[in-house]
Image (cartoon, rainbow, N blue to C red; front, side, top):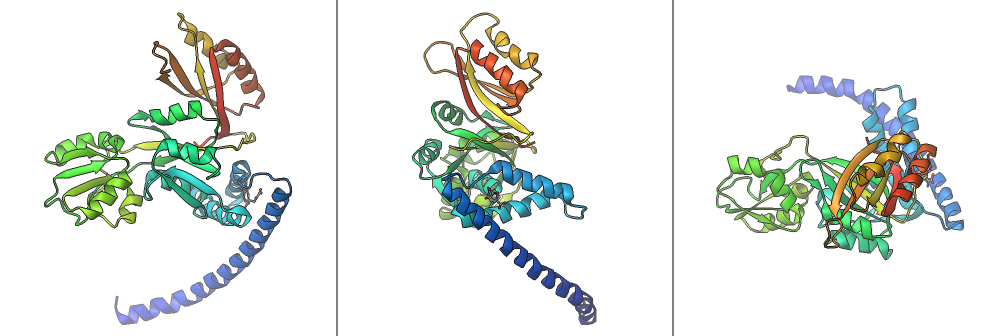
Length: 364
Ligand SMILES: O=C(O)C(=O)C[C@]1(C(=O)O)C=C[C@@H](O)C=C1
C-alpha cells in the first residue's frame, strides 16, 4: 500500500475505532456489573452449599440472546462470546477444576475449554481412569472424557468406567477432529517414525499408507504426548491436532490427514451434578437383558410405545465370561419428561440390569 493510501485508510478508520473504543468501555462497564451480579449469585449459592456451575442456566442465557439478536453476529459467535463471559463470571463465584485426559494440548483439553470456557483450572490426568478418580474423590468438580468417535466407534474404556462409576453425565461436547502430520522442522527429512494415539493412527491409516508408507507407526498414550516427543526428537513425527501443535511449537508437514474429513469425537462431562430439564435433553442409559430370543426387542418396546426416540445404541461385552452384553443407549429427552419417565419405568422393569447415567442438554 502506498503511504498516501495508508494515510487515507487511517483517516477513515480513526473515527470508527474511536467508536469501538467507546463501546468497549461501555461493554466493560456492563460486564463489570454482570460480574458483580454473578458474585451475588455465588454468595446465595454459598448459603445453600449448592453447585456453582449450572449448565441448564448457561444454555438458557445463550439461547435467549441468540433469539434476541437481529444480526450481524452469528449464533455460534454469540454462544462463544457468552460462554467465555459466563466462564469468567463463574470463576468469580468459584473457579471450577476440570479433569481431562492430558497432557496439555489434547482434544480432551480443547473439549473442556469449549464446554466450560477458559476461566477454569485444568487438571490433566494420565489416563481415563484417573479422570474418573479425580472427580470421584473431589479433586475436580467435573471430568471431560471421550465417549465415541465417528470413524472408530466407542471408546470402550470410557464406557466401562461410566458403567462402574457413581458419577453422572451432565453434558456433552462434539468436536471436529482434525489431525495433522507434525514435525519440529515441518519436513520429513531424517524422520523414521510417526507417533500418535492408536485411535489417531487408525483414523489416518489410509493417508499414511499412501503419503508416508516409509514411516514406522508407534502408538503412544496420547497425541499430545506424541507431539511432545516429536518436539524433542527430530527422528519422530506426530499426528496431532491444533492444540498440541501449538502447545509444542511443531510445524505441519501436511494438514488434515484424517481419512474421514467429517471425523468427530463426542465427549461427555461427568460429575456429581444432576441437570434439570431444559426441553432439549438427552438421557444415557446402560441396560442388559437375559440371553433369550427377542429379549433386546422386548426391552426396547417401551421406547416405541411412548414415542421416545433412540439417538444411539452401543453394545459392549459384560466381561463376565459368558456371552452377555451391556447396551449403552441414548434416548431423546430428560428422565423427568412425562413420556420418557413412563418409558424408563417400563424399561427398568424389563431389564436384567438398568443404570441411568444422567440426563443433560443435548448438543445437536
Ligand atoms: O445464574 C447462575 O446460577 C449464575 O451463577 C450466573 C452464571 C452467569 O454468569 O450467568 C454463572 C454460572 C452458572 O453456571 C450460570 C450462570
